[in-house]
Amino acid sequence: MARIFITGSTDGLGRAAASDLLDDGHEVVLHARNASRAADLGPLADRAFGVVVGDLSGAEETHALAEQVNALGRMDTVIHNAGLYIDRARVLTPRATRARWR
Image 1 (cartoon, one colour):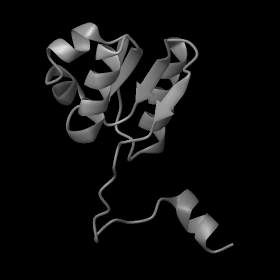
Image 2 (cartoon, one colour; image 1 turned 45 degrees about the vertical axis):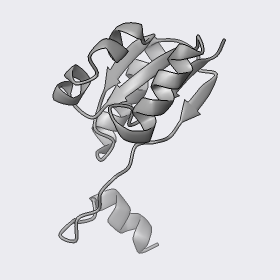
Image 3 (cartoon, rainbow, N blue to C red; image 1 turned 60 degrees about the vertical axis):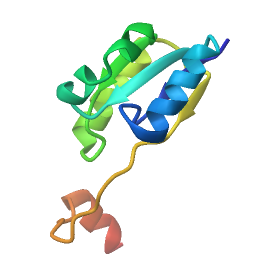
Image 4 (cartoon, one colour; image 1 turned 30 degrees about the vertical axis):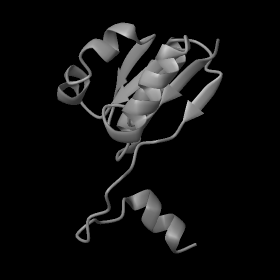
């Protein structure tokens, strides 16, 4: 069976996919944006190969999340399900601003 990492797996399609894949015998790594969302995983977390926590809207937390996943070993598949909401008042980071004006 495969080891599968699913971003955004605390609810909706990500959670449904995780549940189905676990039912099929796969090793699933769940992702939650924060500790509160991870706690909401309940029994699903008990069945998972692991749970990683990190908000993908920031580079530092994204890197920390990648380190958590890498510490669990090789993944056979990654399902990118997490979505990001873009606020109209959002400001570009210095790196994004530099890239935009190149």
